[in-house]
Image 1 (spheres, rainbow, N blue to C red):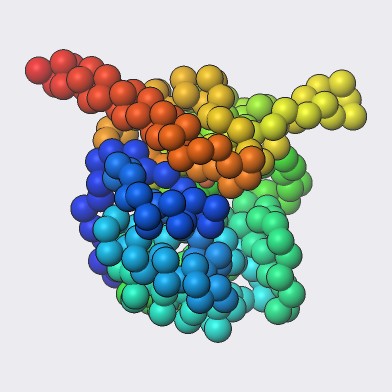
Image 2 (tube, rainbow, N blue to C red; image 1 turned 120 degrees about the horizontal axis):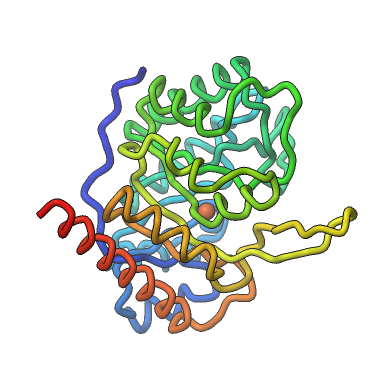
Length: 290
Ligand SMILES: [Fe+2]
């Protein structure tokens, strides 16, 4: 297990994913939003956006959520890309840095998707080695996000939660628990989301995500939930979120929206709802403790 500095104190209120369409408005108006999460890949080859991001980072805590550091890739992580992300991190000093339990590159080819991997010893060795590489390169703890799933692999020998527990134990990484992904994957894969939450290494969770999905008919007459991030958070995901925060307490939560972007005010309404749920959960925990 690599020795890595743990995450620094984080804002307690709910943040919002900052997309390019809202960037100029945030710089100009400085809305009352406690923190933002950004995808570094949106800024690495866009100097004007990078300049605006520097301005945002002077006034708000930032979380960096990579989509291009492919810790699940069998052919290794892209060092040049990791170095570019490291330089951005050095500039804006984020309070969290995270990525996905997935792969998106193969032999230098970038695939514009977060692809699944089998949960077996071979994958575990590869992903753990890559997380150690990332944490050593960045000099800080990396958070791994649970994926949204549509298919499983016959060769998997362990559950996703067992795989995540092993990664935490071997690397000292933290977890980004995407609650909507749990709901969506449980629907698509037919598992119990409450069981999944109970099996997570709860002390390792350092951030929560909430995002929207799209419901589509599948070929068998059933429905499949697609992780589109283009709708508001669904009611079942809010209910699951309430159960998660009752278990893990006050964890920085992010409202994640990537397309069909509404006005910032609509995202603030969702963030306020998350804050209310956290407050109720904290009160319930306090009452039980008292
Ligand atoms: Fe997410």
